[in-house]
Length: 180
Image 1 (cartoon, rainbow, N blue to C red):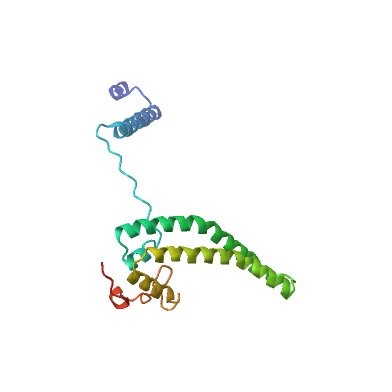
Image 2: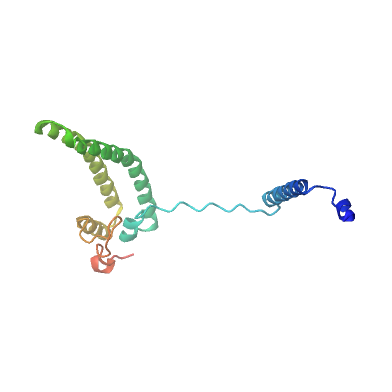
């Protein structure tokens, strides 16, 4: 027994501390080696996923490569303009509909409703201008298809982004044959 005690001069608690320290050093060395190892490649970060429906219109209209570049530019510009207005619209409508317990007259409610709708009108004007620009870059058959798509009432079995059914947009061949 004395030979074992002479062989392990450390007490069990001290031995455990030394083992933990050694393991920590080995882990740090492994992480450093992986980080600094030659031939280490950094993998590119994947692009963030496109919002749902981001290419719905471009795909449905079968835009050419040059049309798609122009469309993407128009789309980015449109969303830069419309996002703040849409947020303001949401807030003003929420404020208007929070007037449930107020004692305002009908005339006062109508005035507040007009004020809340003013921001929605600004969003709608920007949206129609954007769609006019999209239509301007389309070929005549694409423009016709765009008109047919816009004539569909959301909610009538709509599968467009935000819809919940798969029958809104007929197959392209049924809507209008488009030449490439």
